[in-house]
Amino acid sequence: MFPVMIITPRRGSRIMEETELKREIGLFHAVIVGLNGAIGIGIFLLLDYATLLAGQAVVVSLLLCGLLTFFTMLSYCELGTMLPEIGGEYTFTRIAFGGVLAFVTGWLVLISNVLNGALGSIGFAYFLSNFVKVDVHLTALLIVFLVTAISLRGMKFAEAMMVYVFIAIFTVFILAGFLHGLKCDPLSNVFPHGLGGVVSAMVFTYNMFFGLKAIIASAPQIKNPEKTIPRAIFLTTGILTAMYSLIAYVAVGVSGELYVVPGTLLTNSATILLGEAGRVMIAVAGIFASLMTLSTAISVQASVITALSRDGYLPDSFMSVHKRFGTHYKSILFGSVMTAIFASTGMVEVIGYAASFAALLAFILVNLSLIKLRMDKPFLKRPFKIFLYPFTPVLGIIVAFILLLIVERFSAAVGLSLVAVGLIIYYVRMIGYRRFRIAIGGANVGIGLLTLLIRHFFEERITAVFTSQELALWFLNGLTAVALLCVLTGLLNVLSKE
Image (cartoon, rainbow, N blue to C red):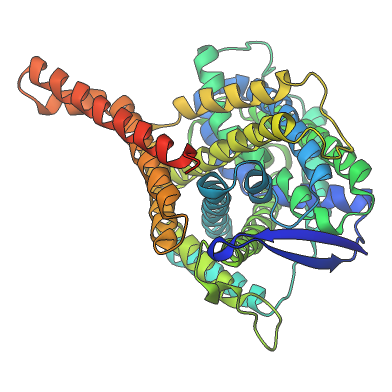
């Protein structure tokens, strides 16, 4: 039994609650948790788009993503072993920064899981269509409601079985590929679309590693967390990187030029290797992966919504527990409705980019939290300390920032709009509380940064509206000045000690 201390800043007070959680998860199960969280629909839907951008070099994109994920996961290792509590990223930033940054981090984690859940439901519909003719949009909605109903009853999918089936299917796929022979060696031409293609593809492939954070979410239940968490994260990162890279290597090598149509890469490769049985095998794996993605996303959504509600950022009603099933049913329903809204669009590319956008922002905040806690609270016990500090967290921040800049503009606008919605919720919830001034400051900073990013991403479109280049320049400069003023006044409000 291990006492977990949770600081709940509700209505300006600091309430210390202790929750005793049984530590029952060992190293093997922790790795299964990480694989179950990370393995999902991304390898089926996002790999195709990444291959269109990078060509054969998509294998390089995956290897680089694995390496960069490893560096960011080092930050998770230190923070997770230092603070093995409920809340994950939200807890890290709450203790490091508190206030608006903590809320934004929780909101970003929520949004990324909502969007990943939407991807899972769309993927399920696509793969089910291999067996029966279905309407993709309607089926995506129905599977969200079905998994929600199961989650409300507290029933869980067999995590280990899902992982075993997925690994078994793709082990057969990889072995068949090498035994059959490849049409081309994907590593013979490393940059067919240039280095820019490899980097652009990483925005998609990076999303395929985000689920590793599930290990941190389970930290309160992991035995000997100071040793088990780092080992589980390192093992899971290595397994995922090797598996994803081998799958991409075989798929691209076998399919040749057949991968140009999104949604066909793995199916075409498996069909070439194993005939109709291969097509069915990939469809079954896709259905399993879709359900894994969706069920994990709904579970994480509910926990984040409940945590934000507990700390006063969302309505109290989201903490309600179902009397019969013992689940946070209102949190589950709210997250599922958000998932269903995005799933109904069927916009795989936009949702994939926006999910990466939200997760990359959260990654930046986690690395900043590590640096802040190292500087402000060096006395905290750190069972695991990352090596090459501060190089590793700074590298994680720089890489995430670069990837943010190359996110497709419309998808970036969707992501920024969702962040803005979160800031509005934060602002509204803080009205009437002692943190009113801080909320105003946070809103100003958010609006200012949003305005600057819109100016950067849409400069050409804004300029095209004006008949005179001089007028356009005046408008853009004025927009920049207003944005900087918002950021400055916001920071003064947030940082003021009065």
